Length: 102
Image 1 (cartoon, one colour):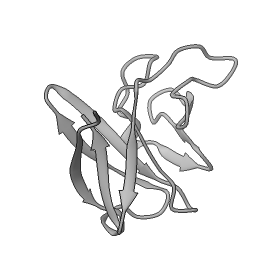
Image 2 (cartoon, helix red, strand yellow):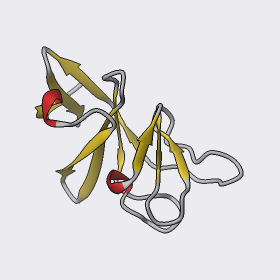
Image 3 (spheres, helix red, strand yellow):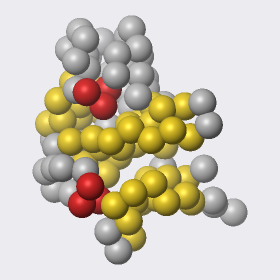
Image 4 (cartoon, helix red, strand yellow):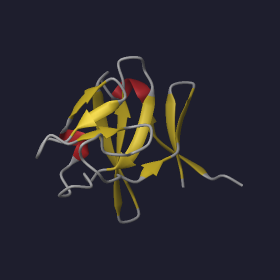
């Protein structure tokens, strides 16, 4: 059985922007694309732990602000030639409210 927790409203995240929420000891970056899709990944780049929420969102990707690694928000995988993965989290939006799977 899935346990979803409410973490905010979609309208509170600008298009091509993000917000950070904490779940236990983990910071999670929630991203909103220009097409209003939402994605959630750990707020740590797999390269050197840069804050992904401070990166630039483009399409379904974010570019880390520290060393320009590009992370695919659907899979959490770094795009070639880089290798690594940011932990992903299930996210959904219902009636404009964002939920994360716990």
